[in-house]
Amino acid sequence: MPETLSAVEITMNGSQPLMNARQEAFCLEYLLDLNATSAAIRAGYSKKTAAQQGARLFRNANIAARIAALKAERVQRTEINIDRVIKELGKVGFASLRQMVAIDQDGQPQINLTNTPDDVLDALAEVNTETVIETEGSGEDRKSRPIRKTKVKLHDKIRALHLLAEHVSPSKQGKGHTAHPFVDMVNQLLRANHKHNRMPIKRDGEDD
Image 1 (cartoon, rainbow, N blue to C red):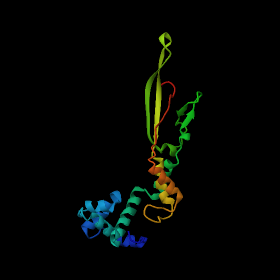
Image 2: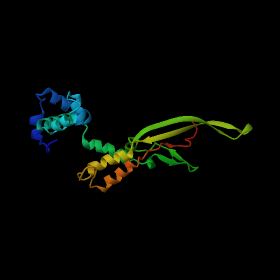
Image 3: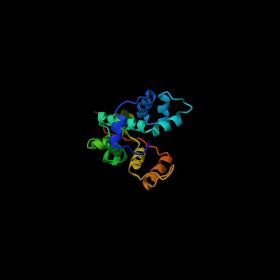
Image 4: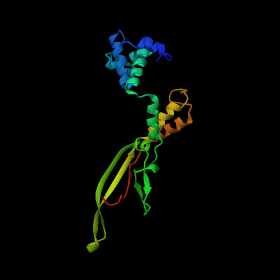
């Protein structure tokens, strides 16, 4: 986009649909994925020149104002703003298993969500439970009982921290490089292809 538009410019130039139907379509399509090239293709521009067309359209002051106005309308309509997005990313980025795990009398970790804060629960991507039959002893002393096992999976913490770092870091100095050491550190972790593992629990007592 061109230099930052003022609220007056957005209101004056972006509140009404553009007279050019294809440019208006580009603005609407851009809101779907914030990708100028894809938006240009969906708006009817040639695939061969979509990248150049998207960049050209994006620099147009009237189109920039229209996109800004449409974004503002969507924020007001959905009540979703950047502060709310950052807050949700923070829940994922700073969630800790320590607030979900208790150690039983045998020293085994147990998932216990009873007193887990809501913000930490929001960071959970999955909670899976299954009941298995555990057998102890042999012969006449052999006993079986149902045991409930639980697995939890967090949303991608490293990715959430990466996005948060981009919001709080200084502006980029060059292609692929930032001036913020925390961003660089998170990028290194991402390149290491960090994978989150589900945390199993050996047992959670007898089934209800």
